[in-house]
Image (cartoon, rainbow, N blue to C red):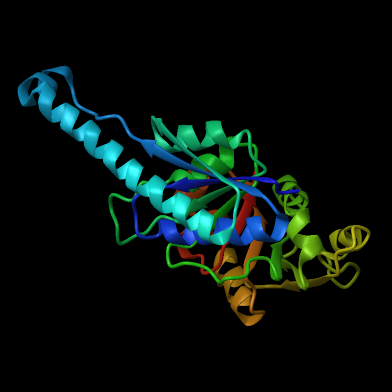
Length: 274
């Protein structure tokens, strides 16, 4: 299912973790990896450009090109050492719009979690935009890195929503190849004495050859995202699958929500779909 992978590449230290994650997935599914570097336009009013001079603007553009060239060489070397078929692309524009555009022609988009210690990190807000607009599954890689294996033990966040359904089917390749799949429902609605939360979707997955175990928990005092991450740690999970933004992004930014919690505090890669 994943034959064409797009990974967002920049000049940050965490880019190596994204490349490693893309290699892990490509190796498992015999996929092609495309690295995309986005050179952002210089933002300044016309009078400022006149004041600083065209030479300085040109120098800034050359600096972007130099950074892109260095990143491209590192990407090519990394993919060649790993034996992965790859392609390098550079484009001018804004990271979100560019990754979304190129992501339309891929099976999986790999982006990075924003590093809170790097205020100029171009990944800030990137995952939100790509998840919402790309129409493709998006794997977000923690800025601290991930394990060498991705998708051996998977935690599926299940709440019965359209987004969760989409995420499960976007992740079917991972789920079929996994050693263990835990379907986790947090604060499920209804009378659990008559119905086990996650049982129906687990039966559906079983018909696809996925051996899934249904679990649920009630945790009113802890955020859903933190509850999922805690269970992921307990179960030695190396990939979380979840639907993104069942509520509006504005609501989650103001009131909080599982998607925001996960993007801010993730400890393992998260495959998200909207």
